[in-house]
Image 1 (tube, helix red, strand yellow):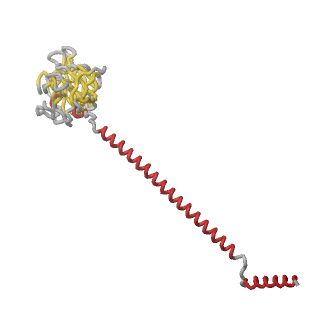
Image 2 (cartoon, rainbow, N blue to C red):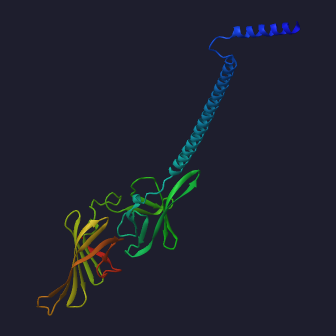
Image 3 (cartoon, rainbow, N blue to C red):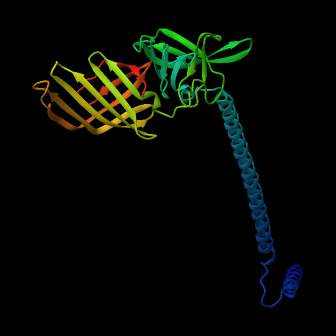
Length: 312
């Protein structure tokens, strides 16, 4: 009897299970569907978190990069500003003091010749060289205010003299020390000692040095001619004929000078002339109150300073 009841119960349970199934479906669908859904949700959540973290990291990285860039830009700006402040101090313009300078503008006195590169030569009134060297641009602070100087130093480094830079682009007056004597004035066009002559006109005239004579004639604004006669004996002398061009304060001849030897057999006879060359070069330079002849072909005029005997 008990066995029959047990079997009946089992049969009833099986019938109940069979009645819950739908044809064509599996009893295992529900649980796997849930797991897959949960897994998907977990995976999606993980990916979202990673993206958010990546975005945060990118934002943080960009901020750091921008901060670094701003810091670098600020440093560069500060450096540029500092450099700008440093460069506001004058550096010296030697072109503003280039030229020939005479005491009180008188060409018969001592002088200074200054080149645009800052080299200089000083001359006695006789035209003989006194000193030469280099100009340095230096400063000192007086009463809290910087004062800038043109300092002239000789070849051995000895201090020759100094001029205060007044800040002007073109200068016509130079005062030694703190406005002390001597007072130099620029000679020539644009200078306080300008006598109205054009560039190069100071060369024109007749000059002499020992047994040699020099005659310089101005032909045009830039063209000149120089004739030198140098007696070697009572019956013989040498002549140089230079066609010249005025260039940067000099009279220059490039390969066009003619040198001729002139000999007299007797006082009544015509001289015999021998042309030694027609392609010589040379130049003439003002030195103090004199003219220096630079013979660039044979150096015949080395150490010669011609002094004026009469104007043109």
